[in-house]
Image (cartoon, rainbow, N blue to C red; front, side):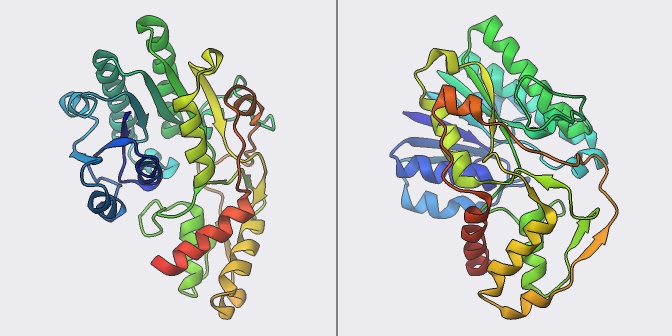
Length: 322
């Protein structure tokens, strides 16, 4: 089977590429390296020269999308401009990549006769809904341009499934973390950012009082969900959207405590690094917790890594590679 991973040089995409190659799939990576990194995939190109194909291209260009889906059986669409703050600062770029780029990929996949189209949706779609845990069919109003783009993706996928008889599955990612997540970018996610700060003996800044909570989800659980969505033979499971998470809440204060515990095993001085608190961040929701019953029932999802177990693995990786 031949699988296209858009954004394959990014954090999630490169992990998916690596796993698929290990499972002997033929893999095409489409990336423009706007946020993805060559070093994430260079080792894969060397290890799998006949099995792994890189196309340097942009999902905002329909031709690049068409070229990348040629002969492809499945698409794992990970390419996007992430980050709520980035979308607030530059909503036009987020819209062009996350909506126009997404539509280009859907059209290209439709025209190429791709068997199934999996795409990275987002927990941000729940917006201002205060219900916990988050259940797929109960959402609120979006709180950021990024959240709007990810919700529009779901609407487009639903319309294409009905109109063109496509098979589409959306995976609403909840705060994914793990190896290869970039700690150095301007919009670095909270876990790699905090790890980098602690390793440099610098004080991380928590937005708010630290009691906001998230359903932090280790990368290996996300890989499992993508593979289940791609390979399921359960007809009822197709053309659905699924929470992709562990189903457990962790506050930012708890996260800090775990990071200090695990990082102190390598450098005891990290235990004494002070933590600072700042104002809440615009567009943030107070709490996020996924109900994963739907994924368990329809896809057989069985996440193997709790937040704490995944964090220990992530810390080992960062200590080796930062």
